[in-house]
Image (cartoon, rainbow, N blue to C red; front, side):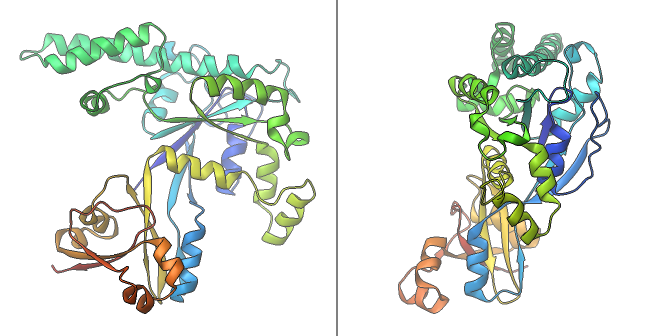
Length: 359
């Protein structure tokens, strides 16, 4: 599955540096001027999951294959993008393609002439996305009304959505019925996408980023709006990402850290996508697979191979907790914790599954 988190931010916020830190590469060009990242850079990263390593040890697996998620470094946004300023439509086109928006917000003043104001920066980005959505929905609504055989439910939703946007409301913070939420997917709007905010602090705050005064201001602002956030020093994370394991460990310990912030940031992106992980294990490999919350056993089988879904017979299921407790397949079976499920079984996060199929 190609789930993508798009990293956006105003110029000099540090989004390309964060991309480098997340992907542990130097694919993204970094420079202190707008639009240095003209084409979106993409990097697939492993989703940290200690359960997979535990299962691999119990099964004696030779290879470990974790779940992955893609991060996309999108060109810097400026005020007026919805009107074509800067990269304008090119930026908006790239962000429409991602599943989650990661806003990088500047919480430092070093080497930047303009004073830091994270709340203002968030408002600039959200306003541009909101204006782009308002233009889009008004155009879609006008086209819809011109066609014969009007769709009253969709038109009503479009009018409701347009009114919300005109009132300055970010759509993901508003309430929609399940039916409306399903129809909303057809509108391809930006402010309905799940989002997270990353406050980027200077290196002297790397060990305790939330102590930064700008981060505290941003955190209060986002918390009042129910938004997800993380606080990091992107420069520090990028520098540590290119070190080998022992050097990185020593580097982190020098400022009192046991791990980088990247693991929690990656997991947060995974959670915002409402994804779940199931496992297949054996002597050859231990494999984590990604599915959407609510997927059934047959759909999970299809994540491995379409033949598995087409010829699905049954699924032998063990919860991760039972595997961790009983250690071996024989003990799990003796304890009555091995279940045979049909194609309609809703796969739970952490299930260990053996699929039976015939094609």
